[in-house]
Length: 476
Image (tube, rainbow, N blue to C red):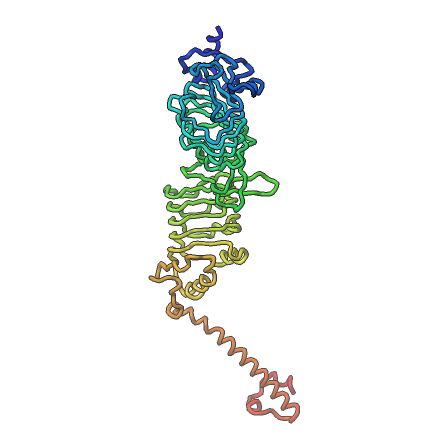
């Protein structure tokens, strides 16, 4: 009856536990909890006394507990147990510099727990026919697993690696659901977590106590910063759900005092034959690459709130004709990089860019190379000088060309371009100066004549030769 109830229970809990052909006897309720939570656990009270040379004890028909073992005292069958009948094994307080798991000893086990000891590293790999479904290596200060240690555990459903010193998660099966606990591994890097999420469907245990280190992933801070597991999972979901056929990747870790760290996003939509900007960006997008498309306008950045965090826009090799739509946007005030190489810009509104550059010193860069402008006298005299003055903000200023003249903007000669009729306006200043000087002379002459008339009683020549006018009576 017990056997029937166990088989029926397996059908609902985990099919992999019913693939065994051997007769199975259920461990007592206080020794076993299903695979969805934890492995077989033998309490400290089950340990043999320290005076017993056999460090292992049989606690049920198919379960064994071993305590305080090292490489010389680990003998699972010394407690009158046959190896082929042991399905659940818990080793407590083991002291092993290297644990080699290649041995066939583990092949018939369903649950293996090695906890609360010291294991320097795990070497070798489980055999291909190993049936382990629940594996617990928690609280052992393990620093390293061999590359293929766990790849042959095709029935694996629970993997507990918590409270160790791992920096990398060992590889394991890529199919099915695995409950994984990697909490309290203070050296754990984020990259392996991302890779593990790509490979299989993971259910994380103790998610709130799990974090990873960011530098190798985000290349941002010189110091190491902890990223909560929730952020890593969010980025994984973002990768899978990135819209518009674009790719979404983590870019950097943003830390604000008093708030949990957040991961900023890079969205890559290059080479997708897009005719317009993506209508909506994922939250916290700060880098957008839309190069190598057929986009002609940046108008969508005016009204879409998801563009408000954007700091870098790469839009090379498109059909963009103007940067005027960016004026007044949050992006244009705070951007770091704006790259518009090889577009169809015909003019540069220098006043817009000057306002931005003057406020931010060396902070912002705009790439404009390989655009072909409509060049005229103003281009030669004004834009050319402006580019030279702002070259620290426009690193490819030497690659801006003219569309109507076969020349670079920097090679334009004002003396050749500024010969049209409107260039007479250059002489207006001389005319104004001459008129002012003539007015001053007339005022001085009249003043002198008046002074002579008052002191000598006659008008000097040529004032005396001028005919009298009707208004002269006012002076008499």
